[in-house]
Image (cartoon, rainbow, N blue to C red; front, side, top):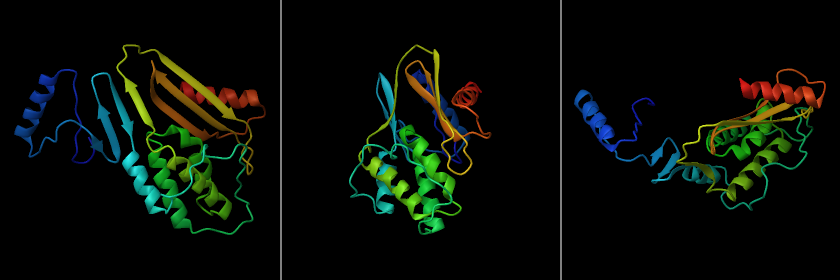
Length: 218
C-alpha cells in the first residue's frame, strides 16, 4: 500500500475477487484490474513469469536531461574510473546534478547494472565538478542502449537462497575506503542487491572481501 493506492494478489482468482468486494463495501474505491503500471514501474504478467521494468520512466528522464538522442555506450562507467572530490575541473550546478542522481537512484529499482556507477557519482553531490557530470552522462548513454532491461521472475518452486559478494579494495581516491557489492537470489530470482562504500578502511583485499560478505549475510 502506498498512500491511497493498494496492490493485492493471490494464487486464487476467486480470493482476489472476494477481497476486492469486501474492500469496496468498506471504502470508496475503484478496481483497476490486473496490475500493469505502478509509480513508474511497469509490470508484465503471464502464466509462467512476471517481468518488471521502468522503460517509460527511463525515456522520460532521458528526455528531461537532453540525453534522448545520445550515442549508447556498452558500460555505465569507464573501467578503472577514479573520481575524487578534489577534482580541479570546473564546478557544476548543484541542484541539477542532485536531480540527475535522484532520477538514477530510482531507476536502480529494476536496473541493478548501474547501481555501482550511480553510487560512485552520488558521492559528489555537495560540490559536483565537470568530471563528475561527465561520468553521470555516461550512465545515461549506457541507459540509452538498455531501455528494455528489467527484472524477470519466472514461476519456480526453488526457494534456495544464493548470495554473491565482491569488494572494490581501497578504490576511493579521497579516503581509501572500499566498496561492497552483493546480490541475493531465491532460486533463479533476484530479490535483493546492494552497492555501498564500507564504513572502515580495509588494510587488505581479504579484509575488504570479509566486510562485504558480512554485509551480505546481514
